[in-house]
Image (cartoon, rainbow, N blue to C red; front, side, top):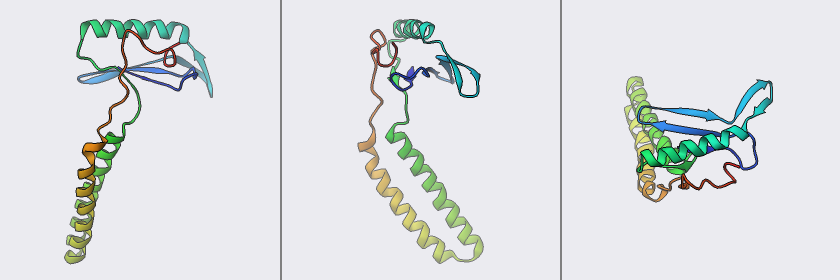
Length: 140
């Protein structure tokens, strides 16, 4: 379970992630362009009850604040860089410029290796939450 939203903002959401999907429970309802109906009065008790029940039924469940973690963004960058190096190599081989393609792909792969070497230090996790004591800054 992840809680998202800025402290003090009426637009919040709880994301319940399961093995094969997720469920988003928003605290607001859309009423028109730029107008949202705030349902924080009923949202807070619901999310607190869901969190307590989930903690009782699944003791190994993770509860955290939402957001893109630095390590996750870094892994996506590494993957895209690897795909880019492969596409560059294939394109240069098909164009008849094998030596240029190999030289450029080797430089990209070198950067990829350096990024993989840094990855173990970026494995920070989102702040863990106690499901029975959610801070009032996240849920009033």
